[in-house]
Structures are given as C-alpha cells and as structure tokens.
Amino acid sequence: MTSSHRPFGLPAAVAAAVLLLASAGCSASGAPASVAVPSPPAEEAALCQALAKELPDAVAGLERSDPEPGSELTAGWGDGAIVLRCGVPRPEKMSDAKAQGVSANGVRWLLERPEGSGPRFTSVYRETYVEVSLDVRFEHDAGPLADLAAPVAETVPCALEPECS
Image 1: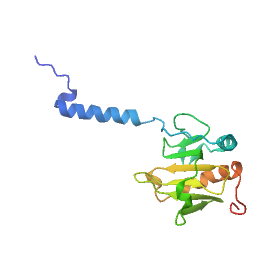
Image 2 (image 1 turned 90 degrees about the horizontal axis):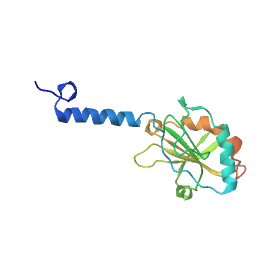
Image 3 (image 1 turned 180 degrees about the vertical axis):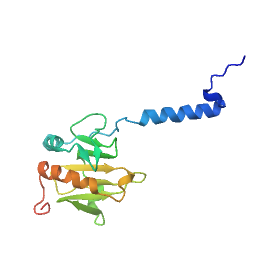
Image 4 (image 1 turned 180 degrees about the horizontal axis):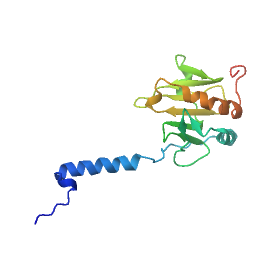
C-alpha cells in the first residue's frame, strides 16, 4: 500500500506552490499596514492629536483600519489603501517651483508620485504637515482628500493667511 502526503495527489512541486500561495494570501489579508510614525515638535503633535479625534470612520468608502504601530499621529483606511501621517517633515518637493498641487474642499495639497506606489499628498500652508498616501487604485482620484479636508481644516490652523481661505 502506497501512502501519499501530498494534497489531492498533486506532484510535490505543485503542492508546495499551492501551499505557499495559500499561506501568503492568508498572512497578508487583514494584516494592518506598517508605517513610520512621525516625531514632530510638541506643538505640532498637539495639533495632530486634535486631528486624530476628528478623523472619519470611513474614507472613500473604506473602513478605518489604522496602521502599526498604533499612534495618534497615524491613521489608515482600507488596510493600507489610504494612510495618513500627521507632523511629517516638510517635503523637499515643496521648494520646487514646478511642483504640482491640488485643492480639495479648501485644503491645498502638494502632489508627489513616488515610483512604484500610488500618489502622496502633503498639506501646504498649515501649522503642521499632514501627509496622505494612497495606493495605486487612487492614481487618478484625489477623492479621499475631500473626506479628510474638513478635519484637517478644523484642527490644523492655517500658517499663511489668506492662502487657506
């Protein structure tokens, strides 16, 4: 009598590939995204803490799922599809006269397109910088910024009037 430990009698290489793919799919599903937590000065951290209290439960139809490690300076929606970091350093690209920007519901954002990922937006003219990274499904959709604009405008004051109005 011959015994086989391979699932469904598949050749060993195929069985190994199936198990590897299955385990990879399981480990990635539902795992929170991991992001670097900013370390702003205390005054800016206080603004970020106020922002954290006002962030919505859903953005662009995606439920809140904060990244690891947990912090009042970071938030996320859709298991890493949308990640917000508050109190980030000023991006170098802000010094570029040719930099692109967008405005969403009264909040202005610098647009960057990092290679190999979706767009990244950083608030401008605010007392601390708020960064929103989107995955590639939002490559041509700044809609999530509209959902985040009101909390940013309410909690992170304008640093350069009348630019914020």
